Length: 434
Image (cartoon, rainbow, N blue to C red; front, side, top):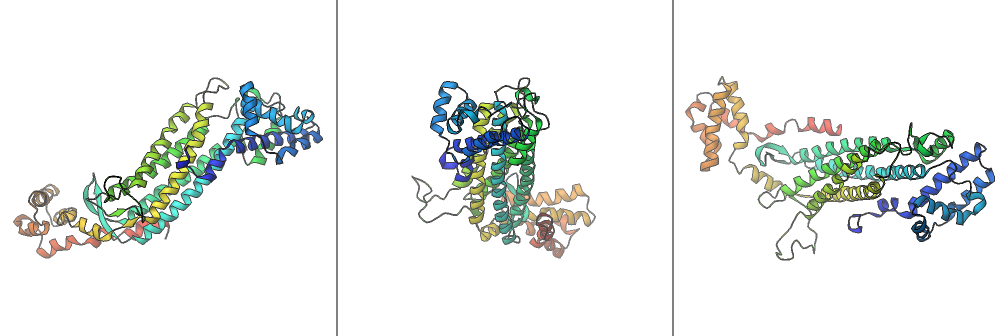
């Protein structure tokens, strides 16, 4: 997590100040529940809440931790300095450190998910707008990087929209999955704390009680969350890769917006590079790399160990901050992407009509030619275009075997671009519901 690839709203979630504030709220809500149950005096629970307006001294907590070698104890010691010994003796009654750490971590993940969901909404809006703008902008479709048959630029945007919509559903589910809290004490048995304390804390903090925790919240939930972030990152790369290919000089059907004063190369003044899309490809690799440690965190020893702790201190901030930045950047790229319909038309004509080969093949079979023979007839004329630069329609018309099945008018009828786009509206209705 570095400032270059960070946005303030997301980084704030992971700041020490935010973390200690959440820890305090967990402890204070637990004290309220304990007071309601008669475990601690109500006046002491009220005294503890007086610290809600306090500024927790991060440097002081770190100073204490340097001695205690325990972050939660360091925080509780500093809290006692604020509220006094009389009330502070009731803080953390029956609780264990993981009650605070895990519940806080899940709150942070939920907040991060809310930002990422908003990011996806912005990206979806941009993709939908560009899809409708270029619904009828015909371009060549490619398989294996080779010209196939015509599509439209709008269909490309629509395809990415559908993918990101699936990702939004996945993330909403992952948010729900991770929105649990645990205040169950050592090894999760509630031996020293009433389950009603957990229920109260979770209700106040927008979580659900974990049905069964050990001393930690089960990490399969977190594996699901970070795996979902990895899938979203892969989809970001999917879009970025398409843009990078379309911006190649030999293709140049679209390119990233190149602002006034922007420089593409320190050596070559003519360069206009897809730097943002390349950056997104790299950021996607980072987010994906964090899914594996999250999956490996699922298997902890017995009721608890801390092998997951160092992992999560890194991947929690890094994965969410990086993906937040990537989604915002991709949205900007889509909004400003420059599209060149003339270049698309020119590229479609580079193979002199070969993109209509399947239509001719089907027309021959409809005329009574076997599929195997029809394929051979079309392919032998297509190879003349590849190897000799011939014109496909001209070669078909000059082929006696083709002409035995199809008239010149019937051959020409198979070279209509509109044939390939006749169901675009149907596809759009499936994607956008309009």
